[in-house]
Structures are given as C-alpha cells and as structure tokens.
Amino acid sequence: MLGFIKKSLNKTADAIKAVAPKKKVTFSKDEIEDILLEADVEYDLVEIIINEIYQEKVTREILRSKLLATLSYEPYKDPEFTPPFVELIVGVNGAGKTTTIAKLAKRYKDEGKKVMLGAGDTFRAAAIEQLTLWANKLDIPIVSSKQGHDPSAVAYDAIDSAKAKGFDRVIIDTAGRLHTQTNLANELKKINRICDKAHSGAPHRTMLVIDGTQGNSAITQAKAFNEMIGIDGIIITKLDGTAKGGSIFSIAYALKLPIFYVGTGEQPENLTPFDKYEFVDGLLDAIFAEEEN
Image (cartoon, rainbow, N blue to C red; front, side, top):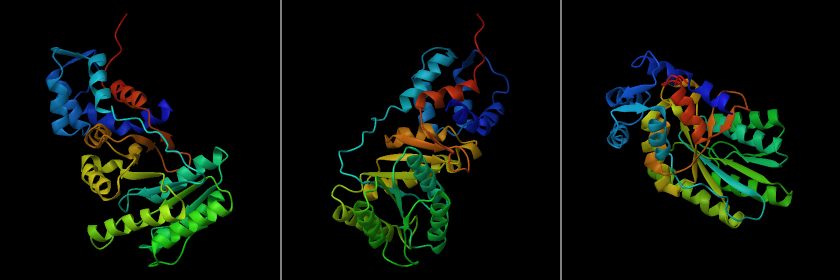
C-alpha cells in the first residue's frame, strides 16, 4: 500500500524540490514553512503547525507528529444495519465520481460481496452511460433510467431490487451539479429520504468524492455538501496526478472527517485505503534525508 501512496506523491515531491532541492536531516522553521506551502497545505494550517514547533531545527520526527495531528479525526465505524448496506456517493462533476464507484464496486466484489449499482445522476445522460459501461465491464447489475427521470426513484428501485435478490451492497451515484445549489441540496435530501423509505437506516454511509488536483479549493465544496446532507467521509481522487498532495492535511483538518480512500490511478484496482501514517511518511521521505548512524 505504501508503494501506491508514495508513488502517487511523486508530483508533490517534485514540487517540494523547487524550494528544497536537497534533502537534509534538519530544516529551519522558515524552510519547513516554504515546503508545506509548496505542497499546497493551506496557509492558515501551515501557520498553526509552525507556531507549535518550538525547536529551531525541525527534524523528521518533530514534523511527523505535527502532520499526524492534523489528521486526528474521529475513526469511522459502520452503523448497525440489515443488508444490503447502502452507500450514497456525492461530489461535483469531474471529480471522478463514476470511476470511483466502479473502483468501490470492484473492491467489494473481490471481497466476495454481491453488489448492485444505482445510476442516480439522471441529470447527465453521459453519467448514466459511463456507469452502465463500468457495470457491464465488471459484470455487476445496475438499475438506471433515462436522463431527466427522478433520481430518487432510481435509488428506491436499486435498493428494493437488492433487498429482493439478497445483495450485500448498493452503491448509488448522484448528480454533481444542478441549476442552483438549492436544487442540488433539495434533490440530495429527497434521495436520502427515499433511501430510508426503501430500507430503514439507508443510506448507511455517504461519501464525498473530491478531486485531488483542486487542492484547497475542494474544502469549500466539501463544506457545502456536508451542510446539505452530512458526509461520513471522503475519497480523494487523482492523487497521482497532482502536486497538491499536501491539501489532504488541510481538507482533513478543516472538515474533521475521515478519508476512506485515495485514487492512485485510472484502473479499477487503483483505489487505496487511506492510511495516515503511510501518507505522512511518504511525504516526509520526499523532504528529509536519512540520519547517519
């Protein structure tokens, strides 16, 4: 896992080299400030980290403890449920939502679970087509309708079908953008209500997909979705394609929500469970030289 995460930080590591071309055992606080800003850690959070470092020379262990502290959100625990477990996937268009759903579905299928998809982004015909293509490729059933149909009906039918056929998991896609944020909020709230009518307690988990290449601008999106319907956790996509890996610290610190997975490539298997220790160590490897014995 560390290999995938560390590899996905290559572009962030290259960005760090612009301000710290040579790895060292210790850095000054000013140097660490420049490094963190270059990695796209939000300015206010950088200031908090720097102000909590009292040593003149910053070692790997000192910075490691401060970075881990920014990721100290409450661990997630699945609620009690009767199968199927229903997941609602939300996020703006272009964040990689549909591909992420396919990756999740493959992961669950590989674990031996029976998975059904619900194509709830009826706002865009392309979203329905793309998810259907993935479902066919992965040999996973999908419930869909035509563009413009009620997404809540799709969610209801997917859950109802999964219950009747003894499925373990239902993953429901949603629209990322409607004409106004009010429309989007109303639609998502309705889907939530209908999911609960179809299966008490559903959706059991709501995950927000964030485009890693957007860096700290994704925080505003995340806060908006969290206010609309409440988010249980985050999936960050395209980590391998961005020099803004440090934004993960800002996102987690601002939202106090767990990060479930990071996308580390285009293939269905390129969805890596997020481990904060592995992520922090991968970033520190790009900054610090090994101490000589």
